[in-house]
Image 1 (tube, rainbow, N blue to C red):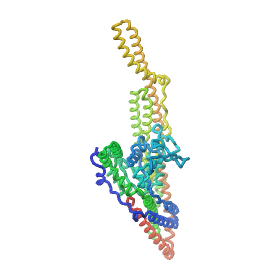
Image 2 (image 1 turned 90 degrees about the horizontal axis):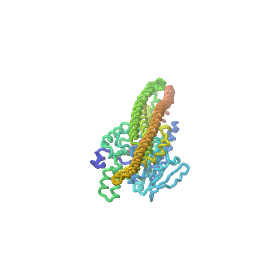
Image 3 (image 1 turned 120 degrees about the horizontal axis):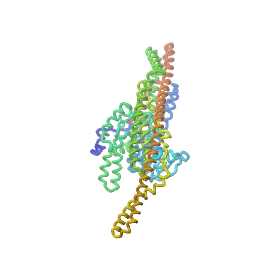
Image 4 (image 1 turned 120 degrees about the vertical axis):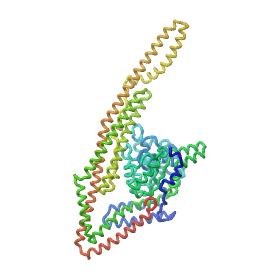
Length: 635
């Protein structure tokens, strides 16, 4: 594979955007000064927003004050399911098997990994916030979904905390492994976004198999509304030979859809190679371990985490606060610039606002073109997903037929389990296709109407209960009784045939032994016939179970898919309408102010212009401060 041909660290120097120094405007050890400076800036912005009548903006800014006080930086590991997040954490900490990675939705609650003097793990329940200690081997039991029914084994658990004596963690990092967005369980996106409320930085994880999807770009926009420092990690480079092409394309997509992160660093890594290095070291092959570790790409990622993020929670919190403040300040500046045009009695402003209102009113009508476009695009998405559903269902049926052809008493349970897993995988593909398609449609419609932010809607489409709780396999009474007997009969045939051959040899010496040999042959033939009957009965029971499951999928999946798509379409339409209504209110207020200003005298307008200009100068000065504090990767 390509990933085996050269060290990933060397490749990173050629293709990865270099990491930039985090510039907060102060030297090392000045965290308290930075936090104080940011809090003063936030206070000024909030006061201006309240004076301008924007209480929502003031509240948003005030909520950021005093955030950056801790030493340990919380780094949230986020991304869609099956991107290798848990494997990445295991590899970063050089702990094979620490976090669960062997199911589709390995992590279903937050797993916080922090520095400790010894290995330890704690389950934190809704009714026991102090937590209860568990074994490291039990992390999967409390943090992962049961692969048989995709439900929590312990529903009350809301977080698992793991302590390790690890140098990266001791440097001042807490890693938070989050549930994969877009999983079969509903609410995963909400859980992940909740983790971001306390995060200082993000590791945004994608894999080398495919470029960023529309839903990933939308989630990135939503995830970074408060967190400014983002490190991109491209996983599974050992698995995908064309990962370099994917990396380049992803960087292009970031420039196109999230330009503010153009300079954020990218790190291609192989978690498998890093963990193989650990095993090589444990086996005593230090030279092989060093080679594999260097080729894994992890040393460069660890260097950034230790040197640029670890122990800098206060500074990162200041950057995050400045990141939020910058958006608020930009909005206030735009409002003041428009206000000054109105106070200057700009004749073009009234015409421009009237044109915007006319366009907006047209878009708000029930027959608006965008509504027809939305309906047409969702009809096309429905056709695509229906084809995908039929193809997946046919594949599942063919696979089940192969299982039935090779059925035996020892494989019945496995067939039932694999069939259930196949149904969950079928829905996962439908849900993923709906989310990605919905996000793309939302982003396109929003761009068409200049209504940014629609694409960040939550678009989970959880599997219906009827598919999450499939019927268990029911064996007939005869089949159940024949289970152990049939197995004994098969062994008995081999023993009996051996004995029969021995009797024939003895019969050559003593003809009287032919009688017991005939009796034994009869028993052999009867046992063989009985085993065939039992196998046929077992195969019929399994066929009945497969038909029942496939029938349930055929009844429930199309209906649930239609309901899910309609809910997505309605969510997009409602969000679009709400944004347009808010914009209409803003335009009406601006038009009314403009009319008043046109009728006012110069004596009335002059002091208002002077005050607006002063506020605008203050805001621009604060924007400069926010830019300087929020420098580095985020600015």
